[in-house]
Image 1: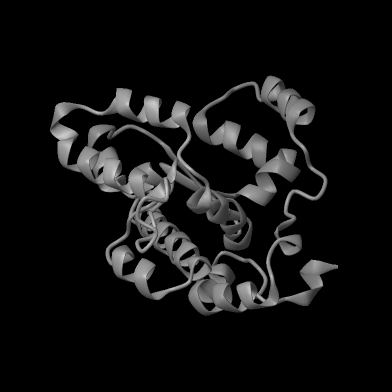
Image 2: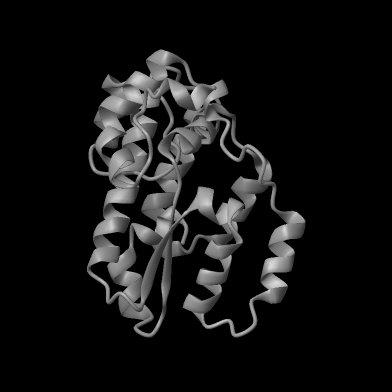
Length: 208
């Protein structure tokens, strides 16, 4: 489920009481590589149009905030960094006092911790957690997900997975993150990385 949905998990679960949920997790360091780029890039017209079409009049407060944030992304207010991604409580203060790597890492922590808490509160037959790295590299993971959602014949899904999935070197964050970046990530996200089964944030073996 997208991050925006997992941050509203109790609400979604109440709307869809018979739904099953898949919690997809990915290494913070790989997520951060993309997130940092999104924080820094200028607004994309196609995205802004799609966003505007989805808004209703009841969203006017969010629309006003979103418009102001986009002006910042255009560089009209360089003293205030524009916000991209999940807005956890306290993010405005963090944007002012922390470097961007640390903010992105905390976004990841806030997202996975909330999603994990929501998963733990659900009956085990309604929710499953899968790591992105396993999803792209293992057909066993795909077959398990098919069984979880009730797909009786996983063969077409497995064939599509073999055809379109790039399985070689799915994680190349180590070529984009500096040692200081890794130290900041470890300070912010290290406990959750290890809880989810990932190596330490400054593990030099991952760069080989």
